[in-house]
Image 1 (tube, rainbow, N blue to C red):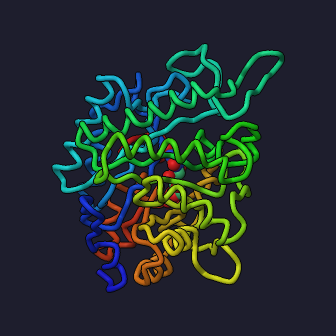
Image 2 (cartoon, rainbow, N blue to C red):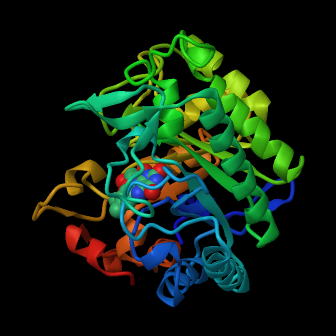
Length: 369
Ligand SMILES: Cc1cc2nc3c(=O)[nH]c(=O)nc-3n(C[C@H](O)[C@H](O)[C@H](O)COP(=O)(O)O)c2cc1C
């Protein structure tokens, strides 16, 4: 192993969370859970990564127990005895390999379409009502809806702890429900959940507090957030480090232990005048550990692959990443597509077998290896 690569394979400890390596598997929706239940193939998929040097697995987005949480077919649920029993198998398999795992708790909000599982008649739920041809396609959430969704996240976190998960990640990124409240493009509410960014953060803060209350002081809570939205890749919640600090402080105080800072290219400076990326700034401003992500080990960013394309992302040098990790710009490194296509990615990096690392193409999405 090259000396700088060693940084990826040193343990990480935060309270009760002890990770054998700093390689994190990024959450990736795979849609291989018919009926919302993760089966034996999903168990094996995660087990293989834990066996091959991934220190922390963040599962694919898994929906909390609210009727409008899901947006896509065959996404695993994180409620109901059948689905939780499936997840328990995943947890046991990952632990048997010495890995750690947290579920990414997900509510898609207003992007849900009528006709989606599990109840086709339920529209999207979001900060704002949306009508199309006189029909409600997004239901604007009332206080009672907000309370219900917050309670669903808290219950999911309680269940995560009960089945042996090592923490939870709240999906607050990419233009899904929590992020829809953050972003002024999707939240023009005139009650206490809308207004400036501080007011737009109220929903997330209540949710984080409820999760913390549900799991107690020692159970790790990760918050994934992003500037970019799937509705607008150039969207920005904040323009300056001062604004970022004001945004993150209340979230941090509400109970976040680790921030997972979602970017498409980890090497891009977040603000002018400094090389720090979003995870670097977040660590500096909050004092909390952070996870970086975005095109680690690949030469093309993931959004190019969300549409039909023949493009291939080739393995890329880790030099820049390792330099930053060695300087502790961030604590942990999440890897998405490189680990999706190649379960042994981390071992190959550790053992200096870079030439054996597989390229990524859309074809990888069609199987669960
Ligand atoms: C197939 C696929 C599914 C994804 N699903 C999720 C998801 O469920 N939750 C999430 O937060 N991000 C999701 N992402 C984003 C990844 O977690 C990650 O941030 C992104 O792929 C960038 O990392 P990479 O360049 O290493 O692939 C997904 C990405 C891919 C490629």
